[in-house]
Length: 83
Image (cartoon, rainbow, N blue to C red):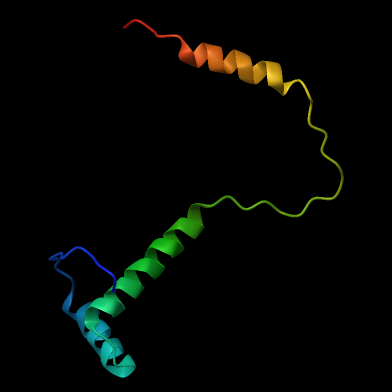
């Protein structure tokens, strides 16, 4: 581990036993196993919320007049609004 934050958390006994067993089987520190499990959980959570689009056939035409719209948008966001 390159560096990290020390953190005290309370987890269920059964989860800790599973983590200890895995660490022993893999001959790794418990902290490394906990980091792997947390990282996998976060990745799984993130994937659930990512929008997935299917494959489409055909052509999409994008208008070429967005340059003016972007300039107008920049001007609108630069204006200060009074409360």
